[in-house]
Length: 492
Ligand code: URP
Ligand code: ZN
Ligand code: ZN
Image 1 (cartoon, helix red, strand yellow):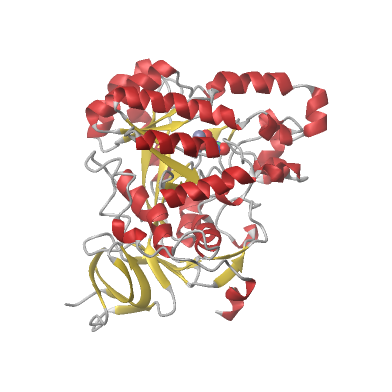
Image 2 (spheres, rainbow, N blue to C red):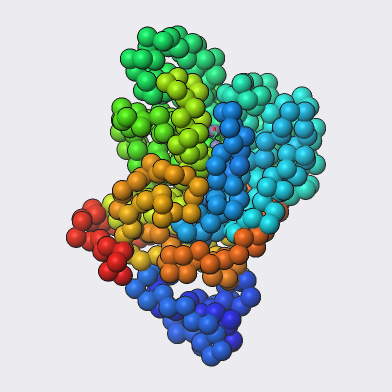
């Protein structure tokens, strides 16, 4: 067989196991996996000494989102370039209707944002912000290829908040159509009360950005997860909790899954590598995101949840704001634009802290970053795994070469990074999207606008929180990361 490209000699992670060998690509698809494929006439991409993993799917991203009185600073050009450099080959954004708009208009608006700019493939979750207006539009959106929906339990000030009636009714429809509802779970009334109690000049002077954490105790998230899980259990509608940040949340999901409730949970990498001690920093306000960073105990519980299965996906909730935008707070934490950059560092953080840190195997990382997101979001087997017939979306990473995180050297529009100065391995030396090299030697080379919209059906949607068996076999005792295991970037 003749191939257009052969990725040669890498440590290739597939659902059937990990092997050292070749991937043959014809057009935009993986055509063969083998030990010594025929390279006659093919472009050979040398992957010797590298891991070759499925392209990452970041299924929780906000690009050019009008939010908190400003617009998030990464658009489809910078956001998708940042993703590619971090081995991300597919993203899912959230199309949110502007005032008075339909679900279909929201999708059109987000299509327009992506047009001519996206370097990688994309689709959107459709946000239901006014249930009575939107509920009869859901079926039409499923027919149009949008099969995942989103409701927010907070954000009344943005005009996005859903009440229990909306959550319950939408979950009923999810069950009927075979679609899935994503939920931002925080308890609005209690949160608003805590914010109001603390919103005094004296407390703001005393505590500054720490009030962001003080006003969002863990029960704010836990109560909301518990409540919406109840609606999923009552209706049978498939539920997906986004950006879960608390240990209590993980406990609730674990118990719900054990009794057969169709609920899946995602966490974001920032909840795995940061905690709320950052708010004590002079620039602590930069770290304000929603839900906010929690305690070290929550961090540990979320890692455990990844291992034991109740946390199925790691995403970023990328919602970038520059220092200038963050400065809008002027000492009032309720005015901080909430969100952080993330696409570029998702894989490096998970690889360095997760795999090299001895918390998960390489194969388990691929399940949480690629295979599970693809399966749960209805993009599998086209995306999410290295196997014959799949899109040739690949990330080639050096096992140990590190780079120092520095905003000036990054593709994101952010002029700061939560991880500035961190030494991370796992940046993509090479990224392939549908067979095309879009990152070469750690540099973006793909053309903007080449990314395509990914229509979805409800087939396979929601996947199963159960992970593919082959991805679980290689757990063994892993040595924790030692500084000596890392090789500085210049030495590659
Ligand atoms: O801080 C965040 N997460 N900003 C984006 C909006 C959301 O709630 O996901
Ligand atoms: Zn949210
Ligand atoms: Zn979000």
